[in-house]
Amino acid sequence: MASKNTTARRAARIRRKVKALSGGRPRLSVFRSSKNIYAQVIDDSKGHTVAAASSIDPDFKGKGGTDSEAAATVGKLIAERAKKAGIKDVVFDRGRYIYHGRVKALADAAREGGLNF
Image (tube, rainbow, N blue to C red; front, side, top):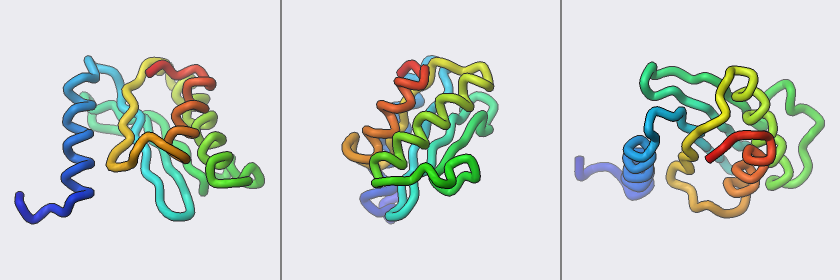
């Protein structure tokens, strides 16, 4: 697997560590593009998404603002949807992104919304 690029290797390394430390808790995975940010709560034991939220979600319309404000809104949405699904403890999977800016804003808002990680 030497052909993987650096970002894919970094994401795989982070995900491997997160899964090893999860202890059966679902994973809060974050993806950010240049314009939008997405979050999913994934149950790896069953292999499916429990809750999802993004900045292109219909519930998000009109709540934009700066990129960090949008990420914070998505964090609140994902926390609300995860709690509705009966999940309050998760493991944060930042993927290949550093814990800074929009990723940090989403994580802080999810914590304020009631998720524990």
